[in-house]
Amino acid sequence: MKKNIFIIFIFIISSVFAQKSDKIKYNGSLISIENLLQKYIQIPSVSGQEKEAGDFIKNICKENGLHITDFGNENGQYNFAASIFPLSTNKPNIILLNHIDVVPENTESENGAYSGKIVNEKIYGRGAIDNKGAAVMQLQSIVHLMNDEDLNINAFNVTFLAVSCEETQCKGGVKYVIKNYFDILNPVVVIGEGPSELTTIIGGEFKNPIFGISVAHKRSFWLNLELIKNTSGHGSITPLNYSNKEMVASLDKLTKKNNKTIFNDLNVNLLKSLADHKKGLEKLLLKNPKFFKPILIPQLRKQPELFSLFSNTITLTNIYTNSDAYNKIPNKTTAYLDCRLLPNIDENEFLIDLKKRLKNDSIKITIAENMPKTKPSSIKNIYYKNLKAAILYKYPGSEIMPIMLPNINDLGAFRAKNIPAYASIPVYLTKEQVESIHNINEHISIKSLHNGAEVYYNFLMNMELEPNNNIQN
Image (cartoon, rainbow, N blue to C red; front, side, top):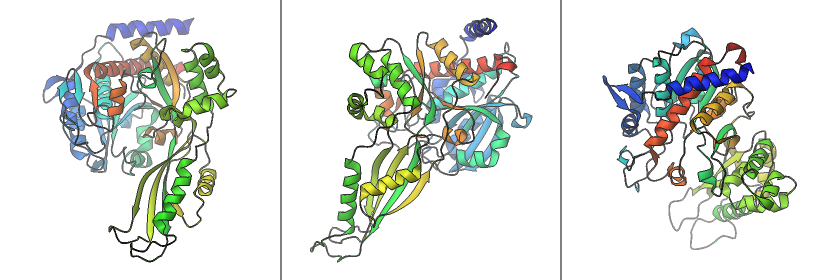
């Protein structure tokens, strides 16, 4: 009963503060967060070139009263923490994680890759969602929390952690920060980029909106395949076998074979949750996915976005040779495989199976990237519960679902250190907006920008109001 009264009290307080200012200090004046995002987008920051944009957002943090700790100050290794309290206070630290870098622009973007242009209440440009838009939501929530005179901020420190080269997973970003400054950060939970509202992406009929909070992720296992075969070099005479021919034949065997379907607690619970929105036979199938595997698996394979949560994926991303002429037969062919493994999959067993599928012992396989195994973050601690409550408060009647992400991000580095980490951009994004990420005309609505900031604020406020005896990992 006492717990319920406390939750009600939190939401009453939340409603009082819901009409918060959406302004932030910039060059001695107050500007809206959409104008701040415009300016941030207009500074190109492709991975490895983050310093100028990093200086910009760090100066915004300074002007708004946050305490800055630098963790590298050069391109490819530009990282900083902007905290309500100095990190030297060693308070338990809630980290809102974001990255400064973006992927290279698309020249086809009609509104300009770095324009920050506002058209029909939408902000366009590289990073509008991934990840400058999410960063602006986070920053506004922290600044508002700090400036809220009616709230006694004491239980936690709160930190805006901006890092480099998330898109390329280089060693100068979050890996560098954790290796050298993990103890200084003293994190108790990390919130980073993740899924938006899911039904607009999944499609179909749903009774209520569904927001996913990612508690786990597939891990990257990037492989380099190399085949060397010395043959005659003139293209006018085709050898019986040569490196390109053998590599293509092996890759054909590899990519044509269906990946095995693997059911685990997270993806089974996802199907069971979706069943609540269905009727008749479809509801029955989704409620009992393991029993109806033979029927469900062919349907899952038709939806790559969904099937990626049920399999270890193998994607051929590049093939190149040591020849640049039409009439020269190369003696070396190289291929890149982007493999994504489900949690707790043994990479050695995966490699053994992959070699069998290639059917060519002459292909040398080296590992380019192997993220560590991690356990899903708990959904029973106060961090998950308060994030869930903050989303429900903003979007009443929604369903909140713990899910696994098929893609990787920097949260994995914290999960590997046993820190609870949750991924969510708690806004509505249209399918068009989701597809614009890393694509042409990336954009986000101004309304979504404000809504996301409000959810993050409510989460932080609820954490500061949380009784100490409820704090747990």
